[in-house]
Image (cartoon, rainbow, N blue to C red; front, side):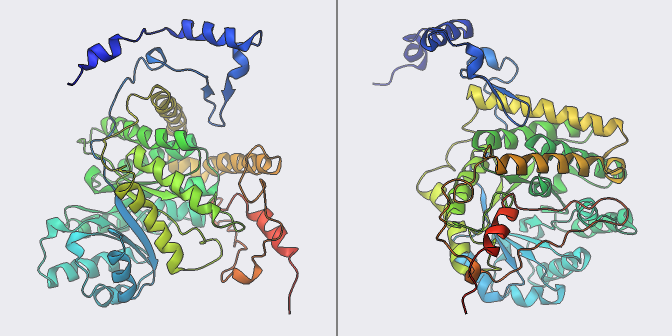
Length: 460
């Protein structure tokens, strides 16, 4: 016999925040309640108790209406065999990097592109989309079934290089025209994860991504919301990351309203953090990746791309890629993370964080707009210096163990040797930029890893 929900909860007495605090004070036996309050790097005060009084404006709000997500695999210059192997092993989406446009037809031989997401990232986006559209036409496929993203973000490319492309907006408009032939295909992907990997806070990542989106809307009337994908990093601050993915959807609604754009659901992509990946104890990265994937799934990402656990030291590794795919597969097939829509709705703590991150990011965004917008602030190095300041703070906290990375500054295995397991350069080619400061990504543990690597014996 089922019991009505009203009767079930009616058996419990609800308490006010004041009553809960009085109970906590009794248990503290003389200590102050304020001793339990701490402030996160996002400048959000975290209290020990939350209830409906904590979220009067965001109670039980559902931020998205889906529960499933695409499992994306990144492949650099892949062969046809590699693509088929990834798809047959659980991937439902592909991000193809640096593939010459002339090879697209050959590489996708036997691949049913109408049933997967196919995204491209290269220095030749116009040629890529033209070659891909040509392949769709040659196969006589229904263009409405073709999904994916061009991963085209010229403003982020400019920020990473320290100079903007010539004829940026003309090229941008040209690409919008080319992608019109594929109604469901995204012509722009805002790579917000780049801010995180350079050292930005969650609030900054949200605000700078929003300001960048505003810059695109302000300069191109042709850009439609249904042609946009937003890609954010997902890191190890579990509950905050869930709240961040929920917050970006709230901010998305606000920016569309500000520009009088017709509302469409945000296509939200998540990519696991490279900033928190470590060289030593690489298996611990599997734990981090699992936590990150959980946050992205619970936060409502449409597509999740988990990096290989050993990507710091290896260019490409079949086992690492398999483990990355399996994280999503296990969360779906064994933990049923894809069966409930927005499970965080109704969690007082997560809704409180969602509200605070939304408010804080909107304030930072408004300050950027008051200074002239994203592009003006980049040319003044304002955004770069804000990120650099926070990155230095994070590195200081890592050195002083306020930030802890298991296997690096917490319980490191000093007997572990990695020098013979590396097939890529770990030193960064830091760009300065010609027009303005370039934004350089860097792993949080990079200096510690290099110092430890230099001390390893050189066995002959």
